Structure formats: C-alpha cells, structure tokens
Picture 1 (cartoon, rainbow, N blue to C red):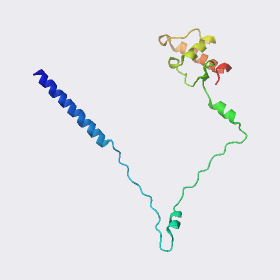
Picture 2: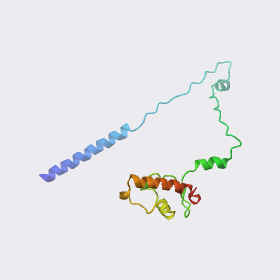
Picture 3: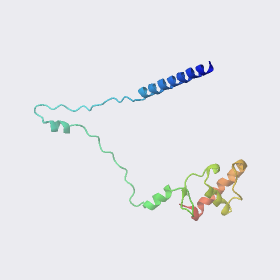
Picture 4: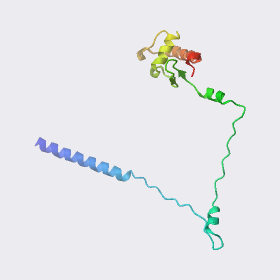
Length: 147
C-alpha cells in the first residue's frame, strides 16, 4: 500500500513540474511590437529618392570641450584611487571594510607599524575599527602603496 502511494506521489510531482515548466516557457516569450517608420509618400512629380531625403534627421549633440591646457596625467591621477601591492603590483580599490580587506593590506598595516597585529573578525570593536581606518588613511599616503 505504501509503495503504491509513493508511486502515485512521484507521478503527481512529475506532472506538476512538467506543467509548471511548460507554462513558464510559453509565458517567457516577450512580445515585441513592430514599429514601422512612416515615410513621406512620393508624388508623381517627386522621385522616390527625394522623398526619402525629406526624413528628419536628429540634430547632432554638442560635445563639451575639454580644456586644452589640462594635462591628461593630472586627470588620470585624480581618477585612480586605491592601494598598490608593492610585491605583485595588484591594485585594491575596495578596502573600507576591514573584514573583507585583502590579506596583503592587513599585512602591510602591520609591517608599516600602523597597527599592532592582524585582527580576527571576532576581535573587532568600534575602537579598533576607528584605529584601523586611521591606519588605512596613513597607508594611502605612503608612496610605496600609491597606484
């Protein structure tokens, strides 16, 4: 009796999955309305090529000129932000949260003497996090770690 109930349950579940998947496939097809541009009609006196030329073209957008006396290196230097690993050359741009900071940044903080040790996540409290943020600011100012 239990085996028969089990078989019927499996068949029912398979049917429900089959119906759900097939319904999902039918409804997932997006309907894209076809938009046809309205072309001006050519008269007997006008050739077709002139009628097509009369279609309005969008006005070109004006570009804002960049000052010519601004050096490109200065612009790029302000855009780059992060810390560079002096050993591998990797640049880390996200290190705001100490828990997710890369290991080499944590080690650099210790080797530069900005913090006393690499803290575990369970050891972090608001006072230690404030110390770490100050240490990260000092680490950013060291030339060896600038990108």
